[in-house]
Length: 192
Image (cartoon, rainbow, N blue to C red; front, side, top):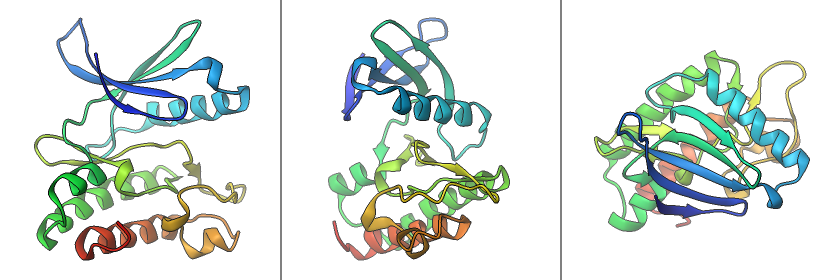
């Protein structure tokens, strides 16, 4: 299929499911560029994605591991990320930001009900479909809530919540902080 994005460990392709004709996204990771510990993190992300079923969270369809690649099959979101749309069309009107944020909050509420903190909500990690639905993506640094919750500092520095920067660990409130930053950046055109 067509390459629609590149990252440190591989690329994302638009592909056709030959069994049902559905267009999907395949995140293809080069195994020779991934350490054992990084692969463990990716497999943890896959285990999490398997359990999540919500209209505002990117659907996970499966994975295929070959000698050279790990291919993660996901829902294809035709419009790309909020960041991509912003770069293409400019500042969003308040009503559109309200639509996107409402949908992201619906997905976030579901995540929190499942005991999951995303920890990296930002424009590039919110994908949109051709009908304008917003979907949370990229659960690579997500963690579970609870006493043994991961307190490591992860995510994107500009977007980080104060409690994460202060090494107190992420909470559900941290995810809300990220939403606030999205609001600032896409309505008021800050730091873009």
